[in-house]
Image (cartoon, rainbow, N blue to C red; front, top):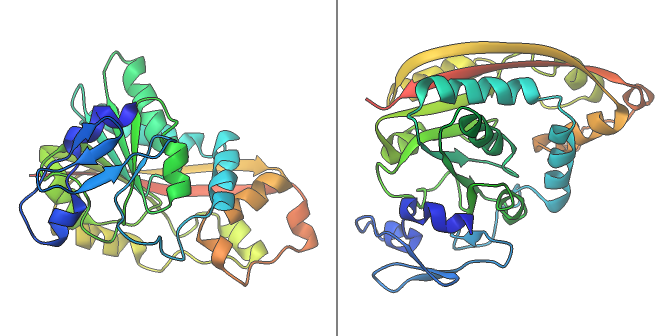
Length: 283
């Protein structure tokens, strides 16, 4: 069970909610327990729910997770996964504990662990997502333990417990990253540039990339972590109509009532991928 490999990274969310010092969790058969008696059952699919409440309405649905797996499995974002893995290989320790917050079905975390293994290095992964459907799929990725938790709340992780933190098209909490990273630990952040998916966004009336996004990201991360490097990744790929539909359906646009499905959307579509891979370090 992969969760057993990362249980030492986890902290009891109930104790954290009471502002108690970090209370670690241990795995007793199929239950996580803390010293104060709180217990959390591991689902038969292998993940554990530490959210403590119902998932928010904007949590990824089963349909969104399935769309994401289909799209990412088609290779259109492999160039992003490769750049992410390269950043970890260049800046992470030989045998890192790797956290991915907003991990979805664990695609990017799995690719990082594969890259580490290919270079003779050993990594272990912890996927955190607010969607139980996403965590269920991430738990199937080799080497990954999966947890349901809210990226916007205090993360159920021990302070100074992980070596590498990933944020890929996901909610960003530099304060929490700084708390859970070990001294000298690395955060790798993938975020969209203004022209990311520009043609598809225009054709389908999708949500825009917020103006000034990169500047705000740099400012907020700079309050907690030190910048190390950044790389812009640009790639153009031709996707078929079904893949274009999945690209729209796998993210926030799935909740956007303005999404259109006109005749042009049923033809093969050129998709412009434009992201920034930023590397930050805990001082």
